[in-house]
Length: 330
Image (tube, rainbow, N blue to C red; front, side, top):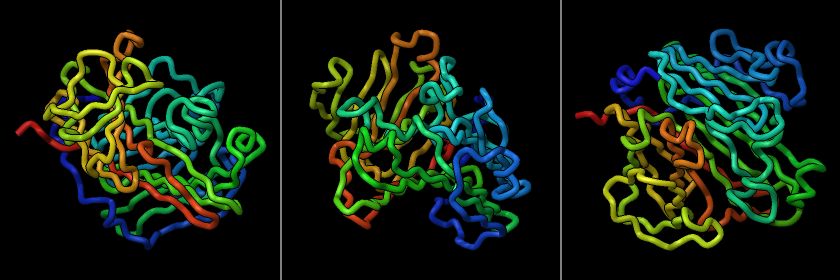
């Protein structure tokens, strides 16, 4: 990332101002195995939404805003792997050990944790990050100054998922650009005849100048679970720091966190996370367990973990987050 340029970026208005009208909207849930050419025919919007072949032949959807910002998401895992400012500055971080051949989840960007965050009865962080999601809609706002490119993808139950989690569901994930902002919304619908519960998170990796210069603000006074010593038996603590900094392995779950949290990246800029519905915030850095890359990123994750989401038949749960770059040098 061109860090000097990134410092000059300021947040745009909140994503709530997105207009519902669209210049082009194409809706039909399709197989995740559609070719890139077919996806572009059905869902591509010139200048706004394009499907292309990514690494290892995996399909990527690219969003481009009229202001010059951009984002990319792999359909495998519905993992956003790039979010760039109009200057070309990359905000997200993909680890050097990441693979894209679907042999394992993509390590970096914004991976999903659903229907389980962390270890538990099923595989680590659940199954949503291990599967292809299907495209269900694309759109672009008609206002020439705010042409917001949007893609919506869905995941439903299969033989693979019901062996781990015996429920019928529909997860709908919407990713859009509003000016320089990246907006992500997850909606989980219970299509079963019995209630279910789950935990979830967006495991967001953000690039920093150096981890020793990074700090997270907005968490002071919160109760948190410190999982650094023993993830299965976390320590209960209260955050007394004005800003959370990094001097070693960090894995903390802040309960009932505020809607606004910032990660200062060490350049005079911060990435602001404005969320709704997630409730908790996770701060993670692997330190020397990943010696080749730990200095270059910090994970600040929106989570639903302290209390599981409980969804009855025919009901749904929704959470969203808007990411923006703000100047904190003044």
